[in-house]
Length: 571
Image (cartoon, rainbow, N blue to C red):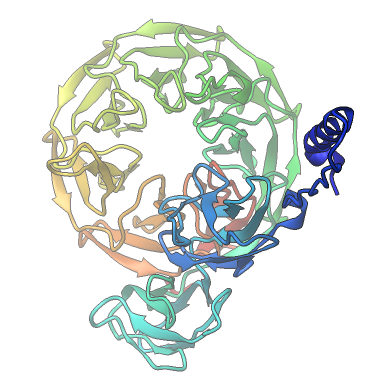
């Protein structure tokens, strides 16, 4: 018995007995000792004790109360964002949050008597294998699916696209004769909301991706620059902090040797950076400029941009500081001009919630100094800059501010005058797109994020267009087979363009043919990527290859792979 809970009643009984005895006469009263119910005697058990659920799914919980005649409970969820539960015990998992949460039943007889159940909310319980596969037209592949949680582990198999092939109840998929990307879906029989998707690339191309040695550090939105000896400098990249809005840069760098299928750690940057630029100079050094910096300076709105710059010397395997820019920039562009100077244009001042700039400046390797040049006609970052065959620079798209709609405008920088002038506009406004100079002198613009009609939202786009310098106009060309942003587009030696990854870490890739103006599927990457880099190389074996490394910001990866084509590949 808890003495502190009965002590006041005990005192009253003793005092009453003394008063009664002190009055004389009469028989002494016989006190009745109360038998209160204590919290220690009450227990609450919640069933089921644990549950694995999908976002938005419901589960009925029950509570058994012992130690009191009052069996009522009050239901609650311990975590503020952990979902809701009504007075009957019907729990609804949160729609947009995953994690582990606690459903709590509190006895109405005593608030200190509680029972709880653990709820694990997962995005998907179905896992499909393989997650991506490349098949020849008419080829076949057996898929398997596993489900964690429900007692019924059966799935139904479907193909998303009409004419995208056939799949039977055992998961045996037969590809169509038509090349392209298709999606095999496994759906839980118990819960139709729970499904997983595998991407199938159907192509007759003999070129393919092959895994190679990984980086020493995971990174995305980094910079990759081919050095004069054929190796690739991989520098900086993104790193997520504890604040979900705060993604800052890292200082590590490494040199990747495709012949040795691996990288070697080299000197570190003097400042943390991601979404920076790294440009090979005529003297063989690499100019690293700007980027978003240290997570400790986020203040809830993303890492601020840097105005610093540094040089990498391959002979010394070290970075050294050089002159500072006039403005901090991240998500800007850097273009090596014919005279050896480097044009730095635009950029945002913050990684999240930033504002773009219309300013531009030139870096002179001889003096190590930046000087301001003419400003762009529109403030922008997440745009592209392409050196044309006539020596001018084409600036395309981007956003004036982080929460603004992308622009469809474009302009030209003339190194002889130091001025920007407007040129024709794109058919589609876009940011985080790519721009690739083709052998015919035109520029291929692919993908990106574009406005949704009648809304302030953005969406990925599969559209593509080309810019013709001779007319100063854009013309639409064939669309990609998949919408993408933060992808790569690499000119190959045969004049085609390899477009890879992007979007929600896609593993697919496709080839643009400038002659036909169309895209066609090629082999898929081994890993899904966005914010990665792709660098065209030529190996001594005669095989041309594209080195693809890293990707991601919140959860960057360290894997690398090569896309091989040409020579021994009948491509």
